[in-house]
Image (cartoon, rainbow, N blue to C red; front, side, top):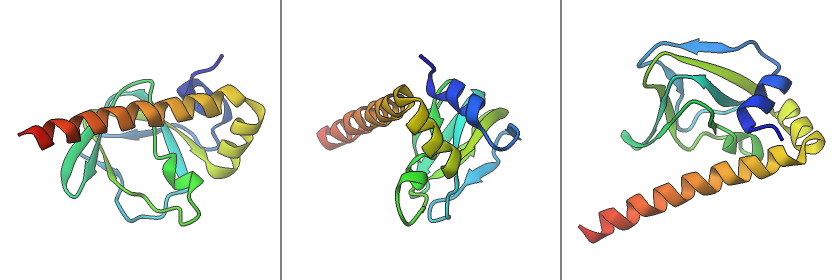
Length: 128
């Protein structure tokens, strides 16, 4: 079974991209046509100017824009450290989902894990 980053590397249509610390990968409200797998480094995700999570080596992000018809980014991604990212466009994403069903399961698990972390954060903020 491939994890999402390995699958992104196998099916990617663009070369790996490198981002120095502080560089914006995408902004909230942008049209998104790529998802990313973190090969090296960490990426901070911002919502309304606040860090809501850090994406680490081995995880994926940006897939939401590929599955929604408006293709809009709902957050801003910024390289926290030097990052090497694998990229996957929508066409290759759909191919990976069709040809590697476990990839779809891993995408859902990644989303679920991130939702759980965000829910715990919101719950903690509500208690203060």
